[in-house]
Length: 352
Image (cartoon, rainbow, N blue to C red; front, side, top):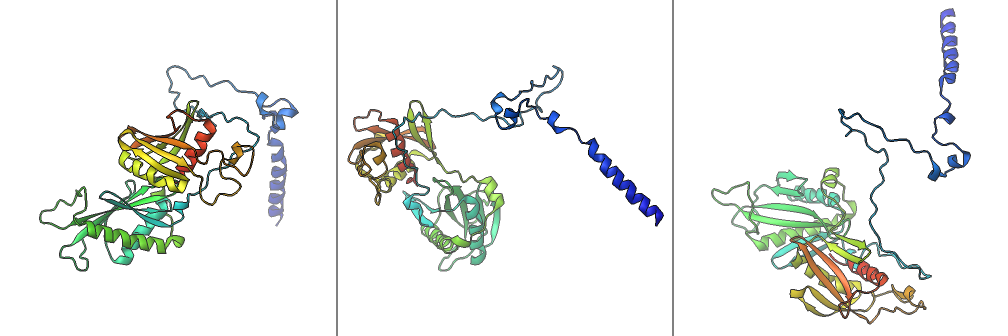
C-alpha cells in the first residue's frame, strides 16, 4: 500500500513538472506586433526559401499552402444594381430521366452524378436477373453475360456506359447490344447495336427503373472517383470577352444548342450550319418576374432592355470533341461584356 501511494505521488509530481517543459508559444509565432496577431497578415514575416545543395534532390520540398493561378476575368463595371445570378438548374433538368436521340444514337440523360447512377445500373441488372461479365469503373463500363430475352431467337449481351453529362452533376447512360454468334470475339464490341430495337427497349426499361428509384439511389465511391460530375460545359472569360466551351463533337453540340434556345428564352429565326451560325431573338425566360434577367441594366425594374433584340450565336470547332460558343450582335460584331455574360449564362444552363 505504501509503495502504491509513493508511485501515485511520483506520477503527479512528474505531471506537474512536465508543464514547465512546454515551450513559450509566444516566441514561436512568426509575428512581431499585436496588430499582426489580430489578423493583419499583410505585414507578416516571410521566411527565406530553403536552399538545397546542388548534389541533392529538391523535388520533395514544396509549398505547404500553394497559391493557385487566378484566371483573368472580365472587369464588370459598376451599374448600381447587382446582376441576377445564374439558375442552379435549368428547367429541362427537373425531370429525373430523359431519353434523347440524335441520328442513330440513343441515350438517357439522368439528373444525378455518375457515382450515383452507377449503382442504379447494377441494381437494375440484379433485379432483372442478368449476370455481369465484367466491370470497368474507370471507363464507366458494365458488360453483361449473354442472356436469352423473351420473343428473341438469339442470346444477347449488353454494354452499359455511364458518362458525365453536359450539365454539372448529371450523367448520360448509353446501351450497346450484341447478338451471340459462332466464333464471336468476346473481347470486342461492335460500333453499333446488332438489334437497335432491342437496344432502345433495354434503354427505356432501365430509364424507367432509374426514374422509379431516383430518390433512394446509393452512391458508389469507386465510380465517383473514376468519373467526374463536373459536366462538359463551362464559361471561359478573358479580357476579349466570354465564351462557352462545350466538350462535345460538333454534330451533337449543334443539336444540343438548338434544343436549348427555347428554354433559355431565345427564338430561333434562322441557321446556317455550314457556317456554324444561329440567328436568334431574345424573348426572355418564361415566368420571369420584375422585368426579367436584364432589367437591372436599364433604369426600371419593369423593363428588360434586351427583349426583342437579335443576336448571332457562333459555334466554332476547336477539335473533334470540343466546340466553343460565342454570342454576337445581329451584325456579327461583339456586344457588351455584361450582356454577353448574361446571355451565355442563360444558354449554358439549358444545353443538355
